[in-house]
Length: 184
Image 1 (cartoon, rainbow, N blue to C red):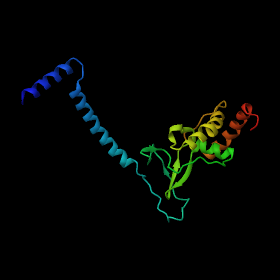
Image 2 (cartoon, one colour):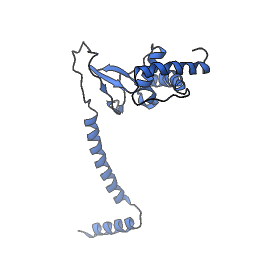
Image 3 (cartoon, one colour):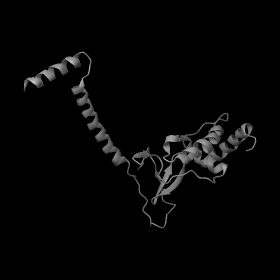
Image 4 (cartoon, helix red, strand yellow):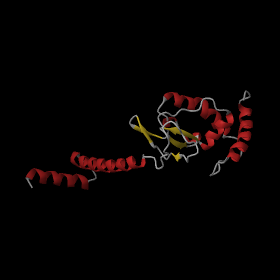
């Protein structure tokens, strides 16, 4: 080793012993973090692929096929990971009962000839949508109404939400909503 390298190592040891950090130590730590990040990104690439692909004729979708349950941010587009496909939009002509069902159970959609089960709408956050129009619709049309409906006394979501729970809770939630918004 040359004198310059020895001096750098002694300085690094002295700085580290005192609890400080210098440029060379920071470079080393950043290099280690980049390596770990690259390994984690590689594992995300593997997980981002659907685990069950519904193979269908390109012009025919078999709605009876078991949908892929979306886990986390499974869809990658626009340089980011999302929990909904790029073509996702909130249903615009859903009646209140259908909307309540989607709020509690989610929905099944078809994207690129694969059937997906999207998480319950109550679990969405505005950042889950790449489209500002979808974010706006969720924040101004869905969340205020169904979020208010969830607030009736005794409302508790079971682990497994079935159609019977959706129907029975809908009646109670609608009555509660009518106390706050008479036009419903």
